[in-house]
Length: 461
Image (cartoon, rainbow, N blue to C red; front, top):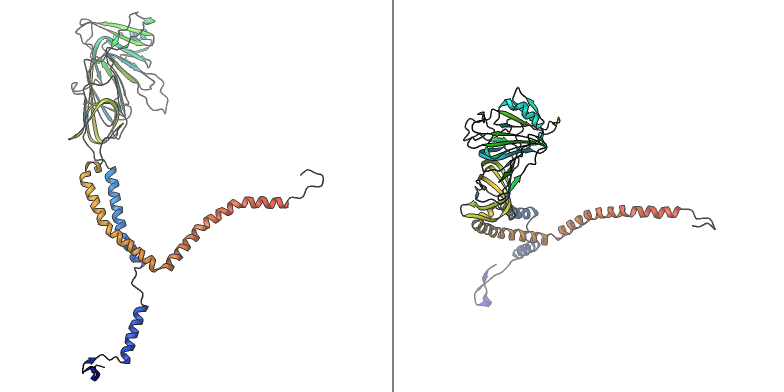
């Protein structure tokens, strides 16, 4: 109890009773026996949830931004094409649209293995069908004014003449496009090259085929299938100057001289030349022939597709408003779009040009890689600081999770050893079983050699 102490001059002093000592002793024992607060297993796992989820979201966003390529609208115009150019329009998720306008060519050749008939309209009257069939070794269907010939034929002129594709058009100046599964156009434009001189015929009227010079175009269009219009080509004679028409089938040839006075005004309703191999096999896929136009003085070819492969891309490629790629030397390019890629191939007076305009283009693959930049590359000035700031915010959470895990392992050493021992036991069993399987053949061989009887004396072992 508390009271004045006479020995200390009347000042008070603290006096503890036995009951007070018992209470203090109990409190000290309780405090010494109490374990420090340590994180439990559930709290440790919860502390890892935020940093792991945050870094997973950051990684997912980074992968998306570095692989996602937003579409662009590129444009290219090559005013002078190289000697050769191949424009390949493969089958995509929609049909390729092909339109040919203002063609002036000196020859047309139909060749290649095919099982699809291709008609060619000639500026001749149907009365010439029997005679022309005899000269070419074909067959005349007089009722429809058609001469049937084998799969390889060349129609050539002494001067370029108008040529139409799918002539039955309501508006010849703006013809409807021809739908095709796939289209392949190859340009060969050597300077003043002689495309081909036909040899003197072994049979026929004895006239030599005219020499064809100038650019050459090969067109392969797969127009087979429902809903598509078959190819049909038509030559129309321009009666401004005399011209000689030559038709060659193998070593047979027929020629017709046309003048302004003698040429029949039949348009595309005159004599038809039907080119067919006659080798159609049931169950086989239709194969259209290859059409080659020689001595091209003028032509405009417009196509629309979702994929374009160029063998020689040249000129200025406008990728974005402030990004232009210049190709001084031809490079191969593969262009893909989710919408439409329009190409225009134009030949005038021996000069070929190519224009291309794409919409929603997602890929332009060249020797330098994909020229369509990813979202990360386009917005690097904005995305990099944002990502670094988010990583900085995640660092304290990661440090707290590491501290909780370390405290948990230090406070529970027995649990840690038990878990490690259990894990090691489970890892040991597969290796032990594998060792027994490997040793089994050797044990079997050792037991068999032990049971083998000894050889008799004097007998070789």
